[in-house]
Amino acid sequence: MTNPMTNRVVCLHAQDDLRLETRPVQAPAEGEVRVAILAGGICGSDLHYWLEGGIGTIRVREPIILGHEAAGRVEALGPGVTELAVGQLVAINPSHPCGTCDFCRQGLERHCTAMKFKGSAMYLPHQQGMFRDLMVIGAAQCHPLPQGIEPGAAACAEPLAVCLHAVRRAEDVAGPLTGKTVLVTGAGPIGALCIAVARQRGAARIIVTDIQDATLAVARQMGADHAVNTRTDPEGLTPWREGRGQVDLVFECSAAAPAIADAVACLRPLGTLVQVGVAGPTALPLNVMVGKEILFVGSQRFDVEFAEAVQMIGSRAIDPTPMITATFSADQAHQAFETARDRARSVKVQITFAAKGGQNNKEAMA
Ligand SMILES: [Zn+2]
Ligand SMILES: [Zn+2]
Image 1: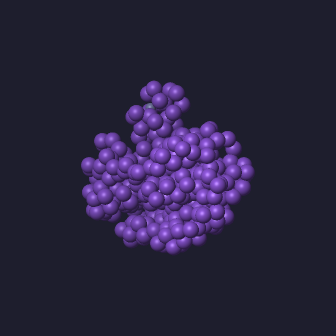
Image 2 (image 1 turned 90 degrees about the vertical axis):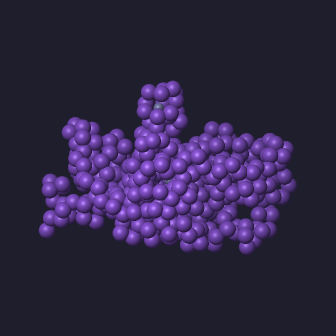
Image 3 (image 1 turned 120 degrees about the horizontal axis):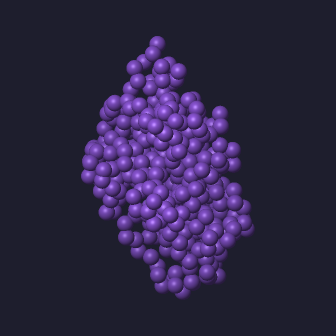
């Protein structure tokens, strides 16, 4: 009944060339563990790599295993690992800063100049990602969750960490979210999770915009009070444009110029715009931003927020499952990517791995 361990991977060879392949199974070295990946979320960056061969100036220059949002079960411990146990569900932090550069020493690890971020094509060699049956990784990057948490929920720790960091950036300049009127533009996974965090932090009202009804319906389940489809209801934001704007804080998660223009129109003078979404160079209504003295705050990735995200999912303070709109097995990876790119029906699409290697291999579990 013991199946041979397989290690299937979803590897992008070039733009539009996504392949399911197998790779040798590695043994974990000192300080490492081997994790049977049970859920991996497809992120916008994975889609950009696949559809466009990169994001802006970051180009896919060699085969790369995609995926940086994953959770699984520890199934083998390397020498010296005592803080994890075989069988534990863990969320894997894709971020591995060097710890010694100027930024790391200032506690700004997310700006590390030698960052190793799994599934990223930023540097050569590319950092191979987590869409695979078996992942060997440093034990310190694995964060345990309690029994009973769904692997799919655990795999949302990474995008939730992005949102917790965006909220921290907002709080740094604008104070607590309690009582604030918050607008979230773009109801993809990051928008949906920003809504959940804003709700949890006591925002008085949360408005969300998108151009798809399906993503807006999910956004309501995640805690939004008002959902506006700006394509079918162009006047839907009128109440929040009144006066010189009614919104205190925007999480801009679309990186679409019309959404940014809407956001700035709805912000009150001295309001805060946290830019979370990214695309290439994007037009900004600078005249209105300056005229209203808007605080513009960039937010990228996360540091300590990954552990906070795991804690929040593990304690069910935030439930990300309403945004998981589809789950595919690894042999349907291509279909999973096709579904993920279709924003008319998808928020977060996940792939399940480790059908054989993770669960049926008795030797590895022993
Ligand atoms: Zn991501
Ligand atoms: Zn560093």
